[in-house]
Image (cartoon, rainbow, N blue to C red; front, side, top):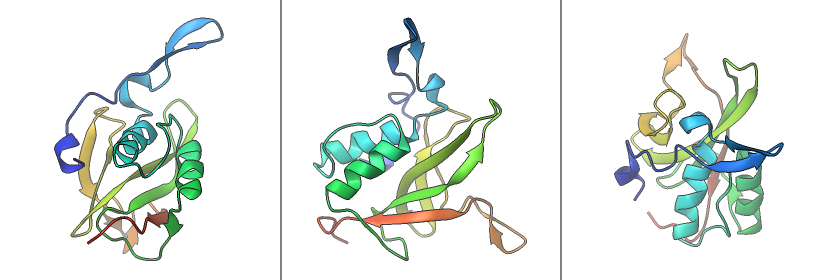
Length: 142
């Protein structure tokens, strides 16, 4: 399911009333990583509900028994450090580890899930984007 989600636009938009006005809280895919990951986890009953934020996704994961591990395993959830967006806001990022040093997460540039190196590559022998959490659930098998 994770690999088949690449390039889908189904996680781009979610409309809600914000200050009395209809607003796309996912900003056409800019902020879709949490809803992407949580929607897949809900399908497999590994969390309770879908979430629009990384923080609420992680809280649900902890309640469902997800544990922080040291090394990624296929199917584990990766959380990257906060990044400054053009809007001046900092946002966390979350995605799936799919093996062979690769991950799939929602791209803020395209607004769709994309495959990329699990640390977004390296610069001066350091990850381009630091991994701050790797999560595993015992129901996953590999």
